[in-house]
Length: 430
Figure 1: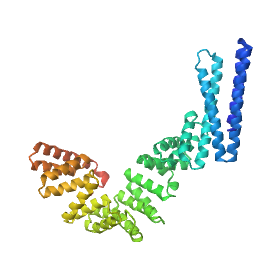
Figure 2 (figure 1 turned 120 degrees about the vertical axis):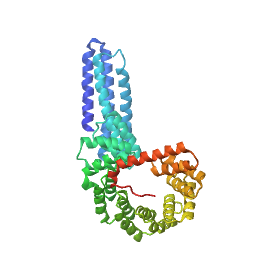
Figure 3 (figure 1 turned 60 degrees about the vertical axis):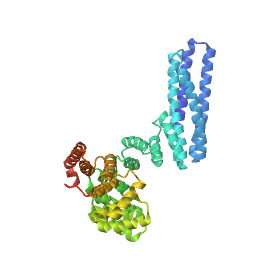
Figure 4 (figure 1 turned 90 degrees about the vertical axis):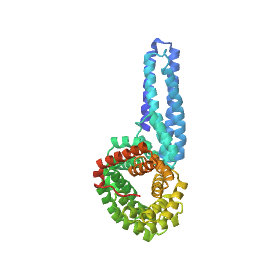
């Protein structure tokens, strides 16, 4: 701040001297008046910069906020005046050059002033206000020392991940050794579901990433989503040996399910259930995983336990209905499916399962409505189109049936092309 202030004042004084030289062909009174005004403006700004320096040296956020507001207010006023004078067609070339120098230095002062203002607010954890002032600083002078990192941190704290990703990417680009900024960048990208970029940035700072279970989870999940399940499971195995809070432990278990490592997921969930039997979500995850292992009978008691904890959990209701259907308990399953659709009419799987059962019972008209709804809500589910073509064929809608059958075949063909990404087989899911 001191060096910028002194540099700024020197530029003003030099510019003033240049103006005097140019004004030899103009009336002396006008030259003296112009120089006096310029010197006065420079001195006022210098006084406020000195106060700003004193405030920042004191470490008092309130003093910094007050001095920053006064400094930026005057600098903004002078900037508008200078810009207005530059645009006047009658301004001589030398004078215009002097004014452009001054305009540049005022931008620097504004960038620095708003940056100091935001820093004081961030110190008080007033990140919303800080973010606004850092963004204002960037608008005036993005090169202000430390500004971009400050802006990235404030945006990250405000969960403005698009902004934090944009800014922190530039910080990491210019300072690759700034690991903290890279970690925030990786978490921002993870939150935006930009998993390949997130995985790359986590991997570049793997030691730092692994220090915290949540960032390690984010890295592992990003690896799962970029078809790197072995690396993800290796991270999960490391985390599973640590002493973690139940909620973080649950995240680790869910890593196993995300990578389709269900055999590891089951004991992981059971360990949490054993220590925290009333914890919401754990019985559901255990039940859903048992279904994926084609063990619906074992899943039913877990899903019932989940509904005791959270009666209106529609995902638990749906999975219980599916497990009941798989164990030939249609009556209760149908009741649950209808309950799910009352709570959420746009639940495609519930429409599909209900439509399929109704079709089996010969209730073709009602079944068709649910299957059509499922096809609309989830058009890429091949089995929905297959069941819908059966329903259409039963009521004589041959052309519609043929169309749905072709859609089924197209989706299945597309999945076969990508089969290698899924261990060479399709996994049965509810």
